[in-house]
Image (cartoon, rainbow, N blue to C red; front, top):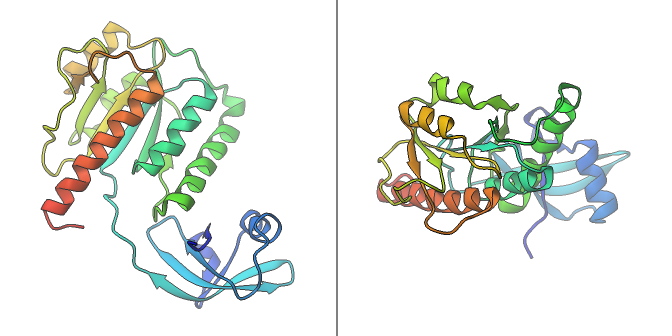
Length: 250
């Protein structure tokens, strides 16, 4: 049986000992009922993983002495998902499964046909929930770096963002004549853009094309937004991993 895995921020690691955060300590003690001396695995969300033994210290739970675990390197910022806001449970499913598929950054989008808008008063709580979802997904999928979930941004702001100019940028569009294929520019990180349940406004698709996006479809089937996102992510993750193996970077 694989060791239980817990998230511990870098600042909680000192002199070869990690102190679990209160929520992680509660999960270990009350939910999992693990015992002193049992070995567990930790990750700091910034690329490092450790193993160590459980130590109960009053209300605190310490893990140590820590030993670094060498895990396969991840493709860094190679895969970014810009996804239109959809119904909360479906959007959270994208976050969870997208993390498992190697997304390094999530960009929630406000689009013309989006029916979901998050009031400013609720944004901080929603972002906290989203970040917690991707952190938990990292625990079970053995990711070592926690993806960043950004605040929602208007679609036109994404098109104008200079930090993604060098990315291979794709927009999924059910009416696009070009199929998504394996013609992925070597070495380029990927930005995948997925629309809402109502699809893309033709003006948005035209603006994306002018901005340098490739407008592609997933074939003749009509897919839900979350299904299309995850199907495309699986393809891109395979291509990125295959490229890393062929280049000797794994």
